[in-house]
Image 1 (cartoon, helix red, strand yellow):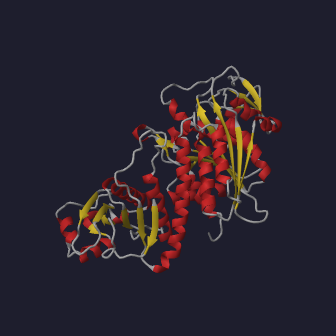
Image 2: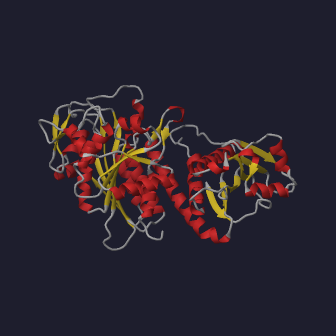
Image 3: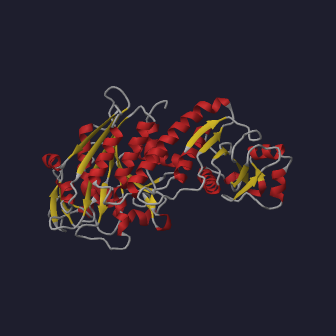
Amino acid sequence: MEISVKLTRPETARTSCLVVGVFDRRHLSDAGQTLDAASGGYLSQILRRGDMDGELEKTLILHNLPHVPAQRVLLIGCGREREFGAAQFRKVVATATKTLNDTGSTDAVFYLSELPIRDRDGYWKVRQAVESIQHTLYQFDELKSKKDDARRPLRRVVLNIHQRRELAAAQRALSHGNAVAQGVALARDLGNLPGNVCTPAYLAEQARLLARGNRKLKVTVLERKDMEKLGMGSLLSVAKGSRQPPKLIALEYKGRAGADKPIALVGKGITFDSGGISIKPAAAMDEMKYDMCGAASVLGTMKAVAAMQAPINVVGIIPTCENLPDGAANKPGDIVTSMSGQTIEVLNTDAEGRLILCDALTYAERFEPKAVVDIATLTGACVIALGKHASGLLSNHDPLTRQLLAAGESTGDRAWELPLWEDYQEQLKSPFADMANIGGREAGTITAACFLARFTKKFKWAHLDIAGTAWTSGNSKGATGRPVPLLTQYLIDRCPKF
């Protein structure tokens, strides 16, 4: 998809389709009013007949408007003008994109960035439009023998800007939006691949491909023997039930010269999770290929940051293995020793994500990070608590919490803070080890984060539980690419004048 930004006039633009907004009570946007005047009131006549009333996401395609060179005009409903906000903007852009792609318009000019949104500037609207367009057109069919190609797909979009002075900000938004979209697409591709393709070795190879030819990226892959020397007994215990060798991937991006300390992103990479000896129910177990979406989001974010050449230092750390039942696999009651030296009683082998993350968090110490954010499809309890709309957020540092929440609000990739009180640590007590790996049925998301918190005493840390947001089920089953937008925005916000 080719997307550009230009200063155009709707009454003279030559394109397959113009996209303009209509608010509730048949109120045309500015571009719509310009077209109406150029066509001798044609749009007003259509609206008076009741063909379009401005209801949110409703569409109407008109052909051959009088005195207008564009072949078509797509009217897109925007709902009530005073209620039109960020969420409605994204829906309008996505609906317009899908409509055009399904109806044969190979190119279009969008007059949507003119729509008023409180506290959102032109940069935000252009960037969100780019990300929404690319996200809507994404499809994963590389493993199908026959591709699901549209008959005449949408190939080119121009995003209109109002004034020439907006061009520089719009170009920057275009660059950032395309970079984020590339990162989201990579995360979705990796998540959608089956477990027999996307193995730990495959993830390591994807990290190498990202670093290839880019002098700002460096990749290190630790093998089983390397992890044994480091004492990563917790991570390695999870891998014992699989024939696939585990990996620990460290991908370093150096976008700022000097000794500026990096921000570390740590992503859970369980490429298939059967639950191990504490095996999961058979229903929907195929979706456990998505248990590496934390790892996928780290790779996607690193791709986005490198694509936009952000002036920041970041390290992505990915512990990755499979969790399968085997004669050598973890058993309930086993006790393992983590890289930190702390011992863990494994009461449930299906609580394996925290077992690999804890060693990766300890490994992160060697980079002396400014802050560490781990991302994991960690607990079903988070899905019950927050559903698919928000990722769970727990942290030992309030400013970091606020920064991540703000990044989520800006991008629509939202998170919600849960408490990390010391009271919950009581649930992790074990009579035989330093801690148990589960804390019972109550507050499962919180006790999982409390477990991880024991390995984060030396740095500022936040945990994102993306179990509800990383993928969707049902007829539209697939990876979402979240929280790549949130993470990338958080990093952009740490870059001065970028």
